[in-house]
Length: 424
Image 1: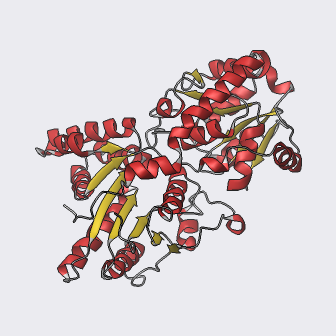
Image 2: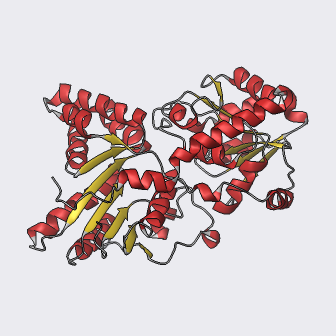
Image 3: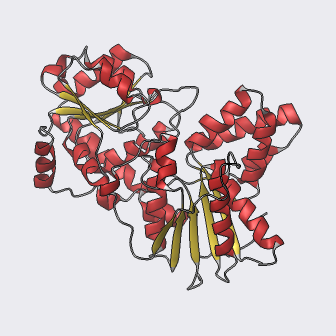
């Protein structure tokens, strides 16, 4: 049985960051309250630090509140300007040591290996060295950016020392988890490259130890949406049901936004539907400039979590033509699974990374980077797809996405019978 005072600490880039994995942390925290964890904490970054980093952020005045029992902590930096880097990481690590010093059985989950897993491993080591004897179980979850950004950049630049640090830190945890089977395979493949260069044995350890835990989604936020609420939300944006193609994601090249805007210019259906680009990101200003002469393209940069599901439900089609880029490959596609739950028009996406683990056979698939093929696929969905086929895709997509419900994912990641044991 879970100890009645058991604590869960998740170290993550939490809200207001626009990222599916900040939603993962929220969903796991909410379920934890129903599974015997009396104290649930998210350790994350001060909002000014997130703003200064240039990360895409949600509107601060419309963030969803967390349930009572969940505490979001944003430790301040340690040191002054003479410490050029690592000041905020020191704040996170120090706060976690304070929590581990308390006699409470604790599970620590880190999401994003850099730097959050280092925070957990360093804090556990410090707490033990200080004689606090923490009762702690650690889980490190590797998400998309860990592989596509951090590990691959190390390998691409020949920085095997940095890759070695990353793998040793990852494997120092009691449990090591990947966000998808694709991510797991990429971790093993990257470890093999490091082993070949350095004579290490990371690949064998990763192959043996890394398990898969898909992103947890609050299905209740997307199911049984009131049609009147959908129509009212669309009306406020000057939209109508089935009157737009929706792109709702980070506005970056890897999400295929350039391909989608270019394809929209070629679509026969553009006289019937608008293209709604909902989100922010590094490519936003450039894409806005590309589409400035096209009054059929609408940009929404202030969509909150509540409105997101309504926009998904009301669209004629949802397009996420994600493509592999040097700095990012879609390792699952949380927005795809959310759209599958919300219903509405069919999904058009690509077989990039782990997207097929999300959509299975419930989406229309195009080749990454195929602009003409993308235009033709959207035209078929909007203009030619029979209502019965659209409904079949919607029903099968929702049924598949229910396997990603946050309660089911939580119970797989935190089985109640698992004892609290020490870090390796």
